[in-house]
Length: 487
Image (cartoon, rainbow, N blue to C red; front, top):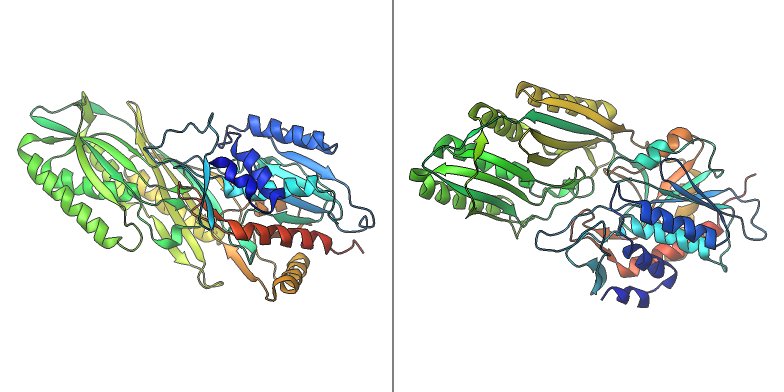
């Protein structure tokens, strides 16, 4: 199944992408892929460096006659988001990704594909391998841990790279050139869990909110998809008030930058109220399906019997937690005035889970306006502080301000027009690219982001449109041929 990739064109990219799918590389578990990339560069006889934060840098000299061209840094990140369907048996730290061709698309078997950002990495690898390309000095920068903290971009030291043009290959719409992105900040919330004995004369259930699409909290937040945490806690608030439901534990969502697709809770309900609570759950499922009919056709919400938990959360804590989750802002907060159709500010209430000692909530806020990002962070701080929780804001990274006079933008617009007879769209993106961080230590860089068409990154529905990979590759080759000279 997976080896279907090897018959696709251009082989220069697909063979490398196949190699990447065979190496487990979830964020924070990148030793194997870093070792692979070190060997890859060294086997080509190229200068290959691993820095202290796990970035891999491979430098390739200019081809004859192109030595006077400005140096180009081709950049992608090595890690991938590990998301899978609950019925898929896959260990992201050990198992390769199983891929298959589905019509015009390449996708994976119940897991994320890793096209984000494996496509960009594979393209840079192909340039490093090529013996028949024309290009100036090229440096490939493969950053570490982009998806869970941008550790590689934060830790990249000044003076390591020599080029002046950054080609970030982490965008997801062929035919579009990206010149700006949102900044972000993480909120990590902690409640001290306080438990009490489970009330007598109750029945235990596991609540299951499943079947949502999820996706990238920057790219797909505009689509208005359901947030499984918000939906689950909406029902919990109603059921506590009307049926005396008690919450024992919760496990919702998985990663801060993925819209939560599944949420689960173990609850108990007084036996006398079980039938009424079950009927109400079906009503809520119907309401959710009606509200989200255009975006969540596979949503399911159901209860199943489970073992009786020994303890439940104390009533006051339970109520404060439910009220805080219910009140927490989520989704698109404001659209951009500067660029129609672009989300300016959003929040993703990504993760809610409990153990015997604590309850953790994780949220990722994004904005292309720094003051709006700070304002949203203060909203969350107010909500959870009033609820008695501790909130820590961390991992803040800057946005990337568009430069419409960018020389590489003008060059790439001209190249694309010559190749395909149209000017590519110039865009900004609500997702977080590494350009803003990388530019902090390299302020002279002229930066742009582009890539093939990828849909539903950060979810098991992730897929890449096969024919756009050829266009992406051809455009990359022609762009490198047309980089201007240093003078």
